[in-house]
Structures are given as C-alpha cells and as structure tokens.
Length: 260
Image (cartoon, rainbow, N blue to C red; front, top):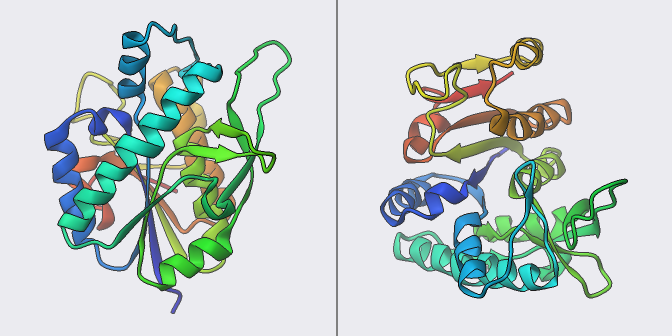
C-alpha cells in the first residue's frame, strides 16, 4: 500500500490570528504520518510595508513584488512566520524543519513574464526537488515551507503559496498517496459567501464550470479551485478545501469541500 502524505496549505488570514493559528498547529502536530505545511502571510507583510512607507500594489489578488517588497516578504515569510510556526510545532511534539524554495534547491522558478503587467520579482515554478523532500520525509521530518523560491541564478522570487502546494502534491504523487488540503477561515467552498451553512460538500469539474459561468463561485476562490482541479488532473489522490480549525474533520472528509 502506498503511504499517505498530507500536503496542507494554511492561509494568511489564519496566520494573522494567533489563537486560530495555535488551534490549527495543535491539530496539525497530532496528524499521524508524513506531512508538509505550506504557508503564506500576506497581511503581516502589508503591515510592515506600510510602516516602512513602501507602497503595495495588488492585481487580481497577486502582490506586485518590487525589490523593496521582495526584501519584506522574504523577511516576513521565510523569517518571522516560518520560524514561529516551526517553534510552535516543536512545542507540540512535531519535529519540524523550515525551508524556502532556495534551500536545498527545493523549488526552482523563473520570473513571471506577462504581456502587459510587470509583476516584478514574482516566480512561476519550473521544478520541485522531490528527491530532497522525499529524503526529509523519510527521516520523519515535518516540512514547513515558506512561499519564496529562486531562479538558480541568485535571485529570490515571491511565489503563490497555493500554487506551491499544488506543485509539491503533483511532484510527490508518484511516491506517496497525496492528499492536498487548502485550509483557510471559511468552512469550505460556499454557494453564498455570507452563509457558512452553504458549503458545497463535493465539487466536480463540470459543476464547478457551471457555477463559475453563473457567477455563483466567489471570485477569490477561483484561483484556489483552479489549482485544486489542476492537481486532481495531474494525479493527486485527493483535494479538500475547508476551515483550518477543523483539520481533523477535513482529513476524514467529514467537513469542507472535496474536489472530485
């Protein structure tokens, strides 16, 4: 039997709330088996940029990353947030190791090219070093990954954490039974963004396309869902989207939205 591997993305909104993050990390630490945690941390980076009078620009939820902003997100994501999560997991008995995409050549990316938008130092992923990740996982290390990658030529790049989670799940699906979980503040994919009871418990590609065409899917969920279906298409065993504090229930598919 192929061993399961949990690849879990935790969103910035939970990271900004110390109590909610602590609740999530306690459940994550108790999760049996091999696991990778990918995190963002957007609001703290924005707050620091404001304090340093560095203007921030977002396009379709994506941060334009100039040189000053890259310094901030590297400090915040790869430094403060990553190491705080690692320390908390150590407290809860999970032997965590914090990485970025540059460490051990973990994730190689290239600077995003776009016909009309200069995203700055934003990276799109080329390769995932699955050999390194496999070796760490087989040593029973819990990997905590910040969304900073590199281009192989000394340049760090800010890379979307949802996409990193998807690419890692795809890369490791030949070695493990990969279960990809996107955890955030909502209880799952909602038909009504203002009604937590309107969770869609399972979602197929066909029903997703229909709901999207009818504009019944909240626009902010679309990139996450596109990543989820791309992962399923590439051989990832299971994708679940739901509330971070209900991680134990998400793992058992008794909460959240299961992508089919």
